[in-house]
Structures are given as C-alpha cells and as structure tokens.
Amino acid sequence: MPFAMILGMKGDGGLASIELASLRFKVIDGGESSRRYIWLHGDEQTARMAIEAHMKSHPGRAFLIAGSEREVQFEGGMLDPNRMFSREGAEKNLNKFSPKWSEKKMNSALDKLDRDRENFLTAITPPDSGLLVALHNNLRGYSIEDEVDNSNEISIKSDQNAHDFFLCTDRNDFTKLSQSPFNVVLQASADSEDDGSLSRAMAKRGIRYVNIEVRLGWLSQQKKMLNILESVLD
Ligand SMILES: [Zn+2]
Image 1 (cartoon, rainbow, N blue to C red):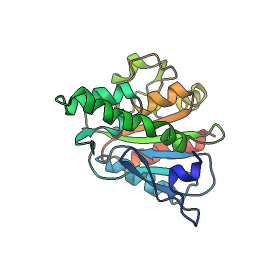
Image 2: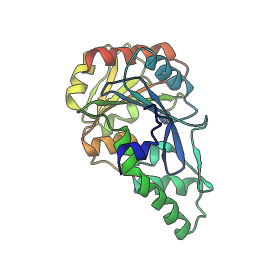
Image 3: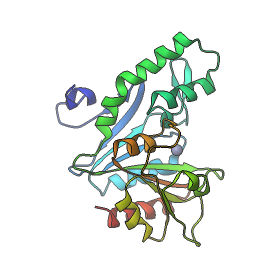
Image 4: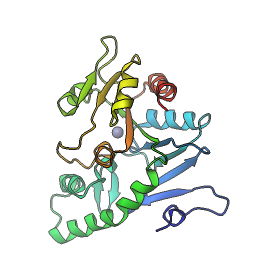
C-alpha cells in the first residue's frame, strides 16, 4: 500500500493521524529530517510535553497516541500500546485484561492487529538509517536495574537516578550516549522473550531506536536527555 494511503495524507501535505487497528496516533510534521519520535502511553504526560516542546524547534515527525490512559480500549478489552508490536506480546497482554475471551474472540482481535502492524511500523520507521526516539515516564518501580539482565552492555553513572536512562538498539549510538552524563543500556539482540514492545520490534528489524525513560514529572531532565541525544547522535 502506498505511504500516502496508509497515513491518510491530506491535500496540503500535512498529516493528521495514523492508526494501528483502532489505535489512533496524532502526527506532528516538523519538516524534513530522518528523526522520528513516538509517545505510546497516554498517562505519561511529562514525555508528551517534552516531545511537543521539542518539535517546536526541531525537524522530523512525531507520533502521539490519542487519549490520556496507559491502556486503550480495544475490541471490548484493554491493550497496552507498547505490547501490540508482536502477536505473541499482544496476546499475553490482552489475556491479562480479558482472561475470559474465547479463542475465537482473541484470534479475531489479534488478526486485526496483524493486518495493520507492518504498515504502521513502516510509517514510523525513520528513512535513511535515521533514528526513532520513544519517550516514556515511570513511577518509582521501573528502573535501569530491571533491564541489566536483558542488556548487551550498560553504562551506569553514579550521580544519576536509576529511573532515568537511555535504552538503545544500536551499538554506535550506545557508545556515543555512554559518553554523556546519563545512564545507558544497549539491547541490540532480540533473543529475549518477545513481549510485544516497540524496542524489541525495532531491535529485531535492526532499526536505530532510543527510548528516553525518565521519572514522571521530571520534565527538565527529559528535555536535557533529549537535547544531549540530538547533539551526540547523527
Ligand atoms: Zn511508557
């Protein structure tokens, strides 16, 4: 399917929104660049503010999920958008929220995601070996410690909070980000369990991807990390 059809491109060249199954993403087109940005969790408002502010002064294209909840309504159940990037991951996630779905109901929901997934991933994949940047926030629990066992390499800075870190899929990007003041992990291989996350899907496809994970509410920290990323990565 041609790119313009997938995206529902408007006559003026601007992009309104794109969808994966019924999950809608607003598109901000900031002009010519191979940078792409994505915000997947509606309850992580600090990350949304960081991307929206960034797009006012940087070119590239950003994809922002519609709504303000972490999980979205899907086929009468609930789905974490960061678990929809593989059939296996989506099934585990849908089953967690709707354990009573019949096999037929589950397969029909998974088929809908399967039909749109490749087009969606194509639409958010940066051109010319460019970089896809995802922004996330956490509340206390999740930290870099949770990723150490799944990572190829880690760079932990003693004066940095364990809840703030870069997660990247490309070794060159890891090397450059390691020299920044911030924590970094490299997850270049896709041999761990397929949880349906975007990082896993991008690692599998060999696409350069960096997740900027920061505590909810720490907008200045997330902006600093985004700015460092822009200055050290091409
Ligand atoms: Zn998130």
